[in-house]
Length: 314
Image 1 (tube, rainbow, N blue to C red):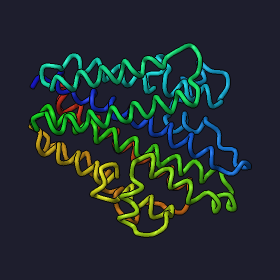
Image 2: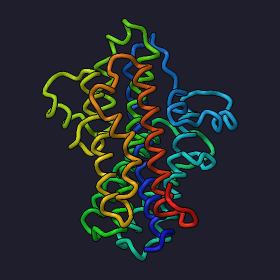
Image 3: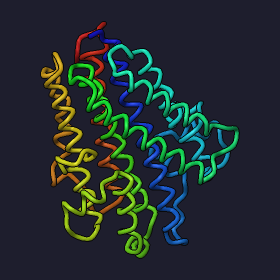
């Protein structure tokens, strides 16, 4: 397989996973804010901070309000990290690799993008538009994932897509968990006690993890249990430990990948019970930041091993 084809498949999968998880993040935040105590002032700016896009947001918007943040994250074509930009890039990468993908995959990606583009306008999207858009994207991306797993040969092309999906999924899971960390840091002790269960139920639902969590934990929803489950569980597809395990499996199956397994050492080090903070929001936030940096190191090694053929792997 040509390295440029492998890279486009990898990024197509990452962009699709990113679009789906931005939709999930917007969903959980909107629903959570409706149920929070009125005296808890948790602004929409938190979402921009979690995504690391403060500077580009401030360059184009004057106010950090709900409508501006929602437009910036979902439908701003000038924001390279927005949902619509992610779908556009996914579509382009799939379009240029159609010869190695099932025809239905291109049709599905194109349909998702065109449907989402219909929501783009000069004004910020209304709440009802946002909900319809996010449901459309989540549903479409899940259909596509199921389609690929059942119609695509499990060769190198599929492995590069699985690699991209799991790396992006792990990164976005840390950002969704960071919503819980940010809320904990904003709230005082009395407020945390009142919203703790509600907050983490919404986090679980945004990750489609609520039912599996209840089957696994068999207890009421508690912050410490949710954090450990979404970080350490090796069977739930959106848990960090599961994603890292899938990344490791992809490395072992791809040519030349076993020599680069050392890049996962920091991720494995973070995936221990002793290192997962469950009590303080600021400790959890720092832990998730550290995990994101470790995932960035993994991406760099992937690029050096398979995509940047002009220089040897580090």
